[in-house]
Amino acid sequence: SLTNMGFTIMFCCELDYIYTRRVLSWDEQIYTKVSSLSTVLRNFSSVVILPILSSFYGLPDHHIGLIAALSLMFNQLVIALARSGEVYITGMLIGGLSSMFIVSCKSILSKQVSQDELGQLYSIYGSLDNLMPLMMNPLMTSLYNSTVHNYPSTVFYLRTMIASTLVFSFIAVGSLDTKVRRRESAENPSLASERTPLLVR
Image: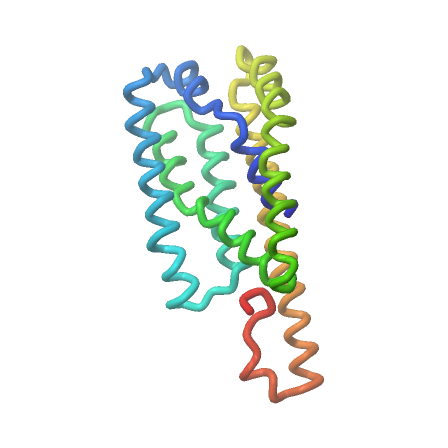
Protein backbone atom coordinates (compact mmCIF):
# COMPACT_ATOMS: atom_id res chain seq x y z
CA SER A 1 0.00 0.00 0.00
CA LEU A 2 2.95 2.33 0.57
CA THR A 3 3.91 2.01 -3.08
CA ASN A 4 0.44 3.08 -4.17
CA MET A 5 0.58 6.00 -1.74
CA GLY A 6 3.87 7.05 -3.32
CA PHE A 7 2.32 6.91 -6.76
CA THR A 8 -0.63 8.99 -5.55
CA ILE A 9 1.70 11.57 -4.00
CA MET A 10 3.44 12.06 -7.33
CA PHE A 11 0.37 12.48 -9.48
CA CYS A 12 -2.31 13.89 -7.19
CA CYS A 13 -1.29 17.41 -8.24
CA GLU A 14 -1.11 18.15 -11.97
CA LEU A 15 1.68 20.64 -12.55
CA ASP A 16 2.97 19.53 -15.94
CA TYR A 17 1.03 22.08 -17.98
CA ILE A 18 2.16 24.99 -15.80
CA TYR A 19 5.71 23.66 -15.94
CA THR A 20 5.76 23.37 -19.74
CA ARG A 21 4.32 26.86 -20.12
CA ARG A 22 7.06 28.39 -18.02
CA VAL A 23 10.08 26.28 -18.97
CA LEU A 24 9.27 25.32 -22.58
CA SER A 25 6.96 28.20 -23.51
CA TRP A 26 4.32 25.76 -24.73
CA ASP A 27 0.73 26.76 -25.30
CA GLU A 28 -2.31 24.69 -24.43
CA GLN A 29 -2.57 23.18 -27.92
CA ILE A 30 0.97 21.76 -27.93
CA TYR A 31 0.63 20.40 -24.41
CA THR A 32 -2.70 18.75 -25.24
CA LYS A 33 -1.18 16.92 -28.22
CA VAL A 34 1.80 15.67 -26.19
CA SER A 35 -0.29 14.64 -23.19
CA SER A 36 -2.70 12.82 -25.51
CA LEU A 37 0.24 10.84 -26.91
CA SER A 38 1.30 9.97 -23.37
CA THR A 39 -2.23 8.81 -22.54
CA VAL A 40 -2.33 6.58 -25.61
CA LEU A 41 1.03 5.01 -24.69
CA ARG A 42 -0.04 4.32 -21.11
CA ASN A 43 -3.32 2.78 -22.22
CA PHE A 44 -1.43 0.64 -24.73
CA SER A 45 0.95 -0.60 -22.03
CA SER A 46 -1.96 -1.50 -19.75
CA VAL A 47 -4.06 -3.21 -22.42
CA VAL A 48 -1.36 -4.88 -24.53
CA ILE A 49 2.07 -4.93 -22.88
CA LEU A 50 0.91 -5.84 -19.36
CA PRO A 51 -0.98 -8.99 -20.43
CA ILE A 52 1.97 -10.06 -22.58
CA LEU A 53 4.45 -9.67 -19.72
CA SER A 54 2.15 -11.36 -17.22
CA SER A 55 0.53 -14.16 -19.24
CA PHE A 56 2.93 -14.86 -22.10
CA TYR A 57 6.28 -14.34 -20.36
CA GLY A 58 4.99 -15.20 -16.87
CA LEU A 59 6.68 -12.31 -15.10
CA PRO A 60 5.70 -12.08 -11.41
CA ASP A 61 3.87 -9.03 -10.17
CA HIS A 62 6.87 -7.47 -8.44
CA HIS A 63 8.93 -7.64 -11.65
CA ILE A 64 6.19 -5.84 -13.55
CA GLY A 65 5.94 -3.30 -10.73
CA LEU A 66 9.70 -2.78 -10.89
CA ILE A 67 9.56 -2.12 -14.64
CA ALA A 68 6.74 0.39 -14.10
CA ALA A 69 8.56 2.10 -11.21
CA LEU A 70 11.75 2.42 -13.28
CA SER A 71 9.71 3.86 -16.15
CA LEU A 72 8.17 6.33 -13.72
CA MET A 73 11.48 7.30 -12.14
CA PHE A 74 13.26 8.01 -15.43
CA ASN A 75 10.16 9.74 -16.76
CA GLN A 76 10.22 12.23 -13.89
CA LEU A 77 14.00 12.67 -14.05
CA VAL A 78 14.05 13.42 -17.79
CA ILE A 79 11.14 15.86 -17.41
CA ALA A 80 13.00 17.61 -14.59
CA LEU A 81 16.05 17.99 -16.83
CA ALA A 82 14.04 18.99 -19.91
CA ARG A 83 14.81 22.40 -21.35
CA SER A 84 13.56 21.60 -24.83
CA GLY A 85 10.40 20.08 -26.21
CA GLU A 86 12.25 17.07 -27.61
CA VAL A 87 13.68 16.13 -24.22
CA TYR A 88 10.29 16.57 -22.54
CA ILE A 89 8.59 14.34 -25.12
CA THR A 90 11.34 11.75 -24.63
CA GLY A 91 10.54 11.77 -20.92
CA MET A 92 6.86 11.24 -21.64
CA LEU A 93 7.70 8.29 -23.92
CA ILE A 94 9.91 6.74 -21.24
CA GLY A 95 6.99 6.94 -18.81
CA GLY A 96 4.72 4.93 -21.09
CA LEU A 97 5.06 1.80 -18.94
CA SER A 98 4.28 3.52 -15.64
CA SER A 99 0.57 2.77 -15.92
CA MET A 100 1.29 -0.87 -15.04
CA PHE A 101 2.30 0.27 -11.56
CA ILE A 102 -1.10 0.47 -9.87
CA VAL A 103 -2.28 -2.77 -11.49
CA SER A 104 0.75 -4.67 -10.19
CA CYS A 105 0.34 -3.18 -6.70
CA LYS A 106 -3.31 -4.20 -6.53
CA SER A 107 -2.45 -7.67 -7.79
CA ILE A 108 0.27 -8.09 -5.15
CA LEU A 109 -2.04 -6.93 -2.38
CA SER A 110 -4.94 -9.11 -3.48
CA LYS A 111 -2.74 -12.22 -3.39
CA GLN A 112 -1.61 -11.63 0.19
CA VAL A 113 -5.09 -11.91 1.76
CA SER A 114 -7.92 -14.42 1.61
CA GLN A 115 -10.93 -13.94 -0.65
CA ASP A 116 -13.06 -13.00 2.36
CA GLU A 117 -10.79 -10.07 3.17
CA LEU A 118 -10.61 -8.58 -0.33
CA GLY A 119 -13.56 -6.28 0.31
CA GLN A 120 -11.93 -4.77 3.39
CA LEU A 121 -8.60 -4.47 1.56
CA TYR A 122 -10.04 -2.57 -1.39
CA SER A 123 -12.09 -0.39 0.95
CA ILE A 124 -8.94 0.73 2.77
CA TYR A 125 -7.12 1.05 -0.55
CA GLY A 126 -9.87 3.29 -1.94
CA SER A 127 -9.95 5.43 1.19
CA LEU A 128 -6.21 6.07 0.98
CA ASP A 129 -6.56 6.79 -2.73
CA ASN A 130 -9.09 9.53 -1.98
CA LEU A 131 -7.32 10.87 1.10
CA MET A 132 -3.83 11.39 -0.31
CA PRO A 133 -4.76 14.04 -2.91
CA LEU A 134 -6.50 16.10 -0.21
CA MET A 135 -3.30 16.06 1.83
CA MET A 136 -0.71 16.39 -0.91
CA ASN A 137 -2.29 18.84 -3.37
CA PRO A 138 -1.66 21.89 -1.13
CA LEU A 139 1.87 20.72 -0.26
CA MET A 140 2.93 20.08 -3.86
CA THR A 141 1.37 23.33 -5.05
CA SER A 142 3.07 25.27 -2.27
CA LEU A 143 6.43 23.67 -3.09
CA TYR A 144 6.07 24.48 -6.77
CA ASN A 145 5.02 28.08 -6.13
CA SER A 146 7.96 28.66 -3.79
CA THR A 147 10.52 27.27 -6.24
CA VAL A 148 9.05 28.11 -9.64
CA HIS A 149 11.10 31.29 -10.18
CA ASN A 150 14.53 29.86 -9.39
CA TYR A 151 14.21 26.04 -9.52
CA PRO A 152 11.05 25.11 -11.45
CA SER A 153 12.12 21.44 -11.65
CA THR A 154 12.18 20.94 -7.87
CA VAL A 155 8.82 19.13 -7.73
CA PHE A 156 9.92 16.73 -10.45
CA TYR A 157 13.19 15.99 -8.68
CA LEU A 158 11.14 15.23 -5.56
CA ARG A 159 8.93 12.90 -7.59
CA THR A 160 12.07 11.21 -8.94
CA MET A 161 13.29 10.60 -5.39
CA ILE A 162 9.93 9.13 -4.39
CA ALA A 163 9.91 6.91 -7.47
CA SER A 164 13.43 5.69 -6.61
CA THR A 165 12.16 4.51 -3.21
CA LEU A 166 9.42 2.60 -5.03
CA VAL A 167 12.08 0.96 -7.21
CA PHE A 168 14.00 -0.15 -4.13
CA SER A 169 10.80 -1.42 -2.50
CA PHE A 170 10.12 -3.73 -5.45
CA ILE A 171 13.75 -4.89 -5.42
CA ALA A 172 13.34 -5.71 -1.72
CA VAL A 173 10.12 -7.64 -2.41
CA GLY A 174 11.84 -9.59 -5.17
CA SER A 175 14.80 -10.37 -2.92
CA LEU A 176 12.47 -11.57 -0.17
CA ASP A 177 10.57 -13.75 -2.62
CA THR A 178 13.82 -15.32 -3.87
CA LYS A 179 14.93 -16.12 -0.32
CA VAL A 180 11.57 -17.70 0.51
CA ARG A 181 11.65 -19.85 -2.62
CA ARG A 182 15.21 -20.98 -1.96
CA ARG A 183 14.40 -21.90 1.63
CA GLU A 184 11.28 -23.83 0.65
CA SER A 185 13.15 -25.57 -2.18
CA ALA A 186 15.88 -26.63 0.27
CA GLU A 187 13.30 -27.97 2.71
CA ASN A 188 11.28 -29.72 -0.01
CA PRO A 189 13.15 -30.17 -3.33
CA SER A 190 9.97 -31.37 -5.07
CA LEU A 191 8.59 -27.83 -4.81
CA ALA A 192 11.42 -26.39 -6.91
CA SER A 193 9.79 -27.33 -10.20
CA GLU A 194 6.17 -27.01 -9.11
CA ARG A 195 6.04 -23.84 -7.07
CA THR A 196 5.11 -20.58 -8.72
CA PRO A 197 6.65 -17.32 -7.46
CA LEU A 198 5.27 -16.14 -4.17
CA LEU A 199 3.51 -13.07 -5.47
CA VAL A 200 1.93 -14.57 -8.58
CA ARG A 201 -0.20 -17.17 -6.90
